[in-house]
Image (cartoon, rainbow, N blue to C red):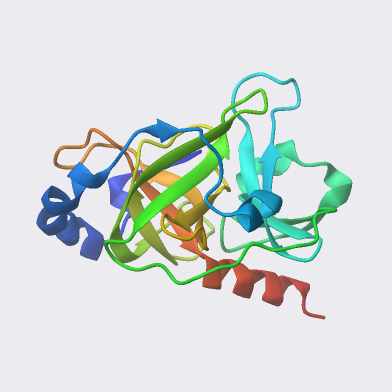
Length: 212
């Protein structure tokens, strides 16, 4: 899980945090593990376990037939021969998978309740839920990366959520992929402010990287 300092988050978001966090922080809930909201999401979700089986790994989601997306920092969890493309601008990696049916997607909305999915280790599914608090946000998560449009949701997520889908809590449509979190508490701060790439960005980056 990529840790991002508050200095790497745009000044606009810092101002919004002071205004909005008090109203929405109470919506955050704890970890859950009862399963997926939508069977199509279950078919498109991929565990990325640690090679030695220790602890939480990462996650991925099918975005097109036989194509999955995750964070580039999860590259060590994927067979080298399956990797198709790595983004030079975002923490995104695309790889080959036998899964054929992509998850359905939707655009995120401010205040929307979401569920994030990740790998809890040992084949266990981990979930964390809460609201989208900021949309859009920009965060620079590596020295060479572009400033990227993303959204921020507050949930008690952590190890194993990298690259995993963030979905609409009502219908399971994938809204984005988790890539990092803010390193310090803001306001009440009992749960982390998580950062996710909008799926429109993820799909657009795959289109760019896979074009001749």
